[in-house]
Image (tube, rainbow, N blue to C red):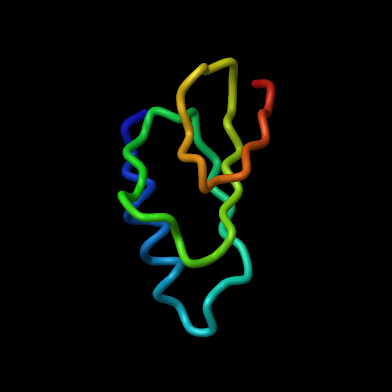
Length: 64
């Protein structure tokens, strides 16, 4: 845990062409961007973590 997903999301958004969707695989132990990404973002929460995910993200739970 602790990887800054905000940095990865910002990098993905800076690409040209801009992605249609961003998919983040995480245990949820991460800082999130202060502002919502400009593209739809799916967060795949791995494991049984009960962390909060920003309201702007669609969440899929993945059992480890």
